[in-house]
Amino acid sequence: CDEAESLFELMDIDKSGSLTPIEFLTGLFKVKGPAKGQDLCRLITLVEKNKRMATKWVKRVRYLNQKADEIQVRLNGAGRYLAKELNGHQQSERRTDCMWNKAAQRCVVIQEAEYQAQTNFPTMVPERKKSTASATVEEL
Image (cartoon, rainbow, N blue to C red; front, side, top):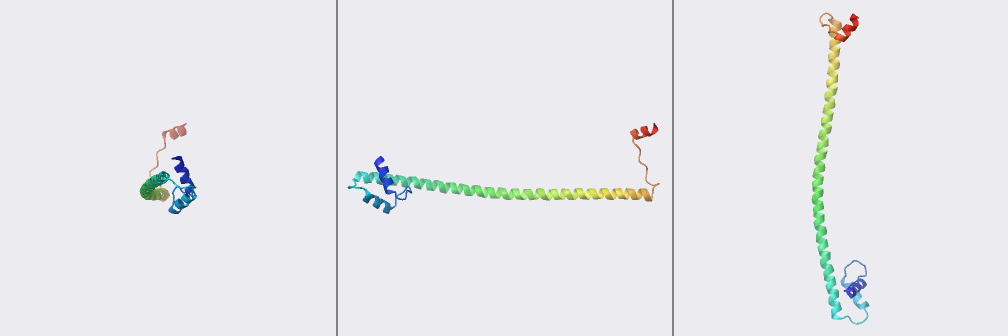
């Protein structure tokens, strides 16, 4: 088996791990002396084994590529969903900010109206009760 591997390495000119027909024939001519049938059978067996292994790996890589494509499709869907959710959160935040701004504006309008009512109609606006702590301080 070591002889077959060394012969294969001699024949594999481009070190690709496989033999083209030209590499095979060139390799046979490089070997001195007539090749025995047994040696050629070993070499052919080795080449067939390598071919089966390469075919198996090609199928495996194709399967893995298919699975990677499926994962990519799922990730793209998740990315679109997350982008929509982020957009929804941003819109909600803008609406919340707008609501707080309007609430602040209403407070200002109410305060201005109360001030106007106090200045225009001072007798109609009831006085606010003082807290007990401030009344106690004034009484002292």
